[in-house]
Image (cartoon, rainbow, N blue to C red):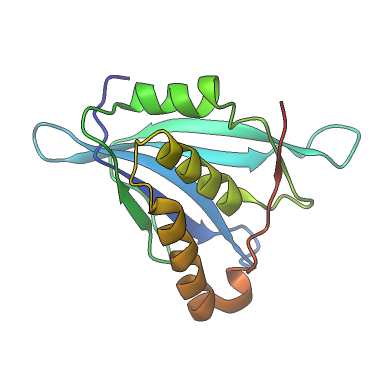
Length: 162
């Protein structure tokens, strides 16, 4: 995907039970006619297997719009360095950094931590500003004051594996 990316959006939407938010990462571009489009990465627990391990499955899809937001926290928006494409970001996230090798906390929580970990990795690679991890942590504190238990703090953390 040679689609140039202008910014990332971490977007939380209510999960199926409405108890907490499901967070996704959108790679957002603006095509030549001014319309926004995106590649959305939705890491989901597999809910398969004989044990309680909730290995991640990456759902990656193209959307002819910016991102979907329904009744959740304000999206966290992050500009990316010039010249970055969707293909470059997907290569960094999945092939170079193996961010798909993630285990959710039972019963399937930890998507916000996955998004934060991607932001941290991209800051280390100078794709986004070095302050982005701190800005995201500040964003989390503000959103927790607004949404309380629906935006749990401290952040629920899954585990990366190799």
